[in-house]
Amino acid sequence: MKKLQLILLDSDSLFLKSFNEYIISSNLHSKFDIKLFSTKESMKHFLASGQGYDILLVQPALYAKEMLVSEKGMVVFLQEGENFAKEGIFEVFKFQPLNKLLSSILSIYYENFSNFSGLARKGIKTKVISIYSPIGGSGKTTIAVNISRQLALKGHKVFYLNLELLNSTSLYFRSQGDLPSLQILYYLKARPDQLLAKVEALKKYDDHSKVDYFDLPPCPDEMMSITKDEIKKLIHALIETEQYDYILIDLDSSVHERNIAAFEESNQVVWLLNNDIQSFQKTSALLERLDDVIGTEHGLAEKASFVMNRFMGHFPQAYYPYNLPIIGYLPNIMEWAQVVDAQQVFYHPLFTQELLSITEDIVVGKQAGVTID
Image (cartoon, rainbow, N blue to C red; front, side, top):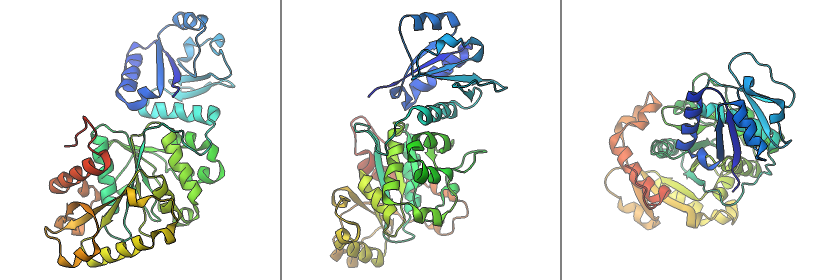
């Protein structure tokens, strides 16, 4: 898969070093082929050899018009203060966190040079995991945000996508001083060709958990209007950025087009069961009529892994007739009966230990050389 040819021309050697180290240490090294220059002369010598670029990120004082060598090459000024962009030349603010700087650059590039069709290219190794239960209050969001956080803390690049009718993302993931991501729903419907650019521009990053996400306010009317095809385009756009090892999708308990799209696009579905007979009965009833309810393209028989939440240490006899293939058990945490701060769900050692064991088995799949503590 072709890497973007990125050239950075800046006289600040410390900035060059930091920028290069950030790319190397992140998964962006698979997206960019980077060359660094500190003088105008060295840059001109490089171009004179017939070399080109996709993106030239340049200190304005070092820029010369002959550096714009191709209509397919994008020049981005590294502004330190006053803006003075010229026609056909873009700019980003230099003194911002490098992850935001790169997102800004990619947003500009995708908006002006991307031909995103709504489908992700084959061969991108992003794993899509949906968290689902047909029972409300089963702990889906608690599981989804915890798996997202633990994967991210182990060095994986993770995007948490909440598709619930009424989401509670802001209780778990936060970013300082950012505007909401609500515009992503507009572009999903009106300008899907710009989704790659808007994912980069509107995504947020939680410094504490190291997870990317959309900061969407509860917007039930907008969520209800999203179609199956639109959800697929959004998932494909996230995959097409080539930045994520995992996309964790937090689903509603009801069955609707958002869920069906996620089922079809997921590599795996973590299906939660509550520790009560109602949960087992409703799950079994839905499984019996699954093809009638959501069609035949979901593949849930192969994708679904059943996990029992709020396990009390014994399996009641009444559950056995349902014969559900449960592969993991998460303990009942009494302290969470009256949670006043959602951040509490990240810090229970017993729950985290059991969740990590399940994550290793289901999500990571015991890949060679990968362990989760």
